[in-house]
Length: 57
Image (cartoon, rainbow, N blue to C red):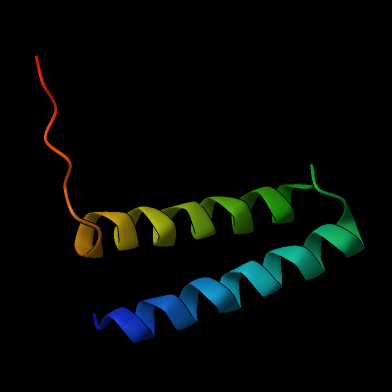
């Protein structure tokens, strides 16, 4: 997936989450589901496009 496409999906999901949370409450099951979907998109972005920082053992 292209970086810009993924960023667009993230922004769309964020807007949906805000709308759902305002309507149904932040702890509603639908808001939690949207939050989890947003988390998955953010994790995908981090894994695909952010530089890996080496860890020292």
